[in-house]
Amino acid sequence: MRQAIAAFIATLAIATALAAPAGAQEPRRGGTLVMGQSTGTTSFNNAVGSGTGIMVPGAQIFASPVMHDDKWNPKPYLAESWELSPDSLSMTLHLRKDALFHDGAPVTSADVAFSILTIRDNHPFNTMLAPVDRVDTPDAATAIIRLKHPHPALLYAMGPPLMPILPKHIYGDGRPIKTHPNNTRDVVGSGPFRLVEFKPGDQIVLERFDRFFIKDRPYLDRIILKTYPDSQTSILELEAGRLLLQPFFNRVLELDRAKANPQLVITNEGYAAVGGINWLLFNNKRKPFDDVRVRQAFAYAIDRDFIVKALHKGLSKVATGPIHSGFPQYSPDVTKYSFNLKKAEELLDAAGLKKGPDGIRLKVTCDYYPGDEDGQKRLAEYMKPALKKIGIEVEVRAPADFAAWAKRMATKDFDISMDAAFAWGDPVIGVNRTYLSTNIRPLVFTNNAQYENPKVDALLDAAGREPDADKRKALYGEFQKIVTADMPLFWLTELPYHTIYNKRVHNPPTTIWGTASPMLDVWLSEK
Image (cartoon, rainbow, N blue to C red; front, side, top):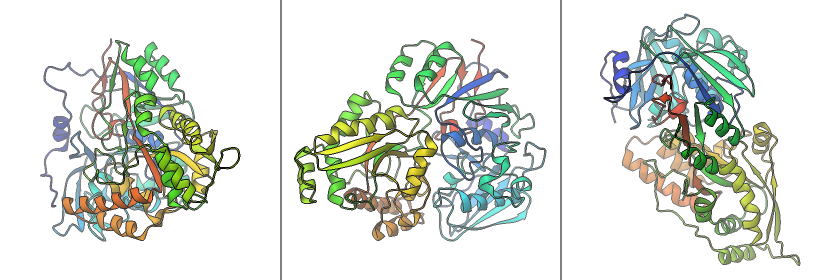
């Protein structure tokens, strides 16, 4: 479908799209927003990394070609307008001519081309920009993205969490981009805030960039991101008024506690494009998980309704397959695994895993993604009594930190692991990576199940290049049917993310990217 945005003044367009509703308080300029994050930041360059610890601060430091509103519509940002060619093989971006990097250098098409190719070649989401062949730059304000085949996910790939525009004069100096020193110090972007302090594991200080290209934005003087891996500490800081906003929060007991505080507001808006799903990951190349009957037996032994109702207090939702129910490509026509211990035991018997004299069939280790207590740790701990009922003895291995868990995933040194992933706006970006056999790589957040199915590979490839929405949905529907039967991993719940914020905070970001988008319109009242 031809996508075109009529040329108009981008400043006015953005101000109109993001304006406060009628009758709202007049925005107040100034103040410091203290935000919490559960995952520490190791780099600010989200051109080569993913995760909330990099994408949230990265979206404040770097500007992207487009933004998106809460209805999934693309909006001008660095690109004033754009158009897709009739054959869907090229997209032309018409860039603002007044955008500056934090060092005063102008943002040009050369920076856009450099950034797109850098992301294509280095980002862990290797399906995200794989169709990009080259980027032409006929002049400083025009970038033409040339595609090998149609790429229906392209406009989502150009959003704030995924396409930071880097200064070529800094990052194009020949040093390896993934370990470039400017990933963590002297970071230069063109976003609304610039980095002024970074204490790893503690805090990040961002200050307003006074030469930002959108007039009178942002309102805030600064943002301080504090790392609170313990959710109880986050709640205590929120209650004390020292912490003003905590995104990506799903700790059930603390959410209930926050609801009772008249100074705090809770919302689940701002996570539409995240499309997060919790799952139990099987190492499909390690016995006995190379047998589909064993994987299916585990699924039948896990009571997802209990997880939702008892462990998550109704805040989450059962996940039925690999695509989040909020996405247009979702299909409910999949293999269902209702809780059935008898069926689980029959499958294990058929797979040759008989109970020993002690009633144990199999001993396994279960790892879990750190920093998400209700979504990961508690579910990993739940596996121990749940699977014991069918003769599976589970040892839960607590990771020392994210790096330790990520290393196990990258080296495939695990039996089963509690994991989660985001879809990031389109299945091509965040779903395909988990199931494509070509994405079995020594990296975290790839196909760590080591699942291989040529039919699935073909369907995902076809869906990733199909511009017709209905045909695309049908392809993803067939994919979901096959993969839920194969059960390379077991989908448990859709992530129940919420944002908690103080009533002093106005206009917290509720677009599809939430706090992984530039916080241009956030402002603070005095009380």
